Image (cartoon, rainbow, N blue to C red):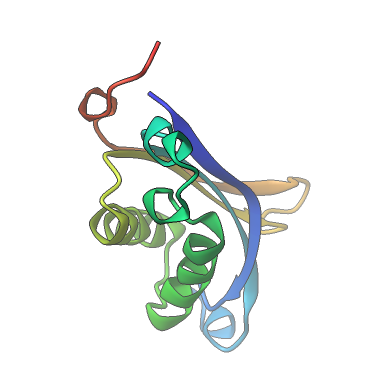
Length: 124
């Protein structure tokens, strides 16, 4: 399966369980790998057949800010469903990291996979 990815997307959003967290914006770092048949857009050099990672990056930040939650697990699950439904992605791997959330750790977070890689044939 071909894959399109966005790595290290830094967004500012409201997330967290504690009251003080609900009153501030915090940084989340998103890594996203999406299954996609890249041969179709490559055939005739067609942007319309690609996964537009610039648009997806904007939509990720908008989604996180329009749908505040307490847990990064909740955000990851809802964001994965949103991306699959919106862009008709057959499979994705999503990592949501919250830097500096734990003292002495660079970052903490969750990584989930949703969909099936079998739905997208590889051209090899």
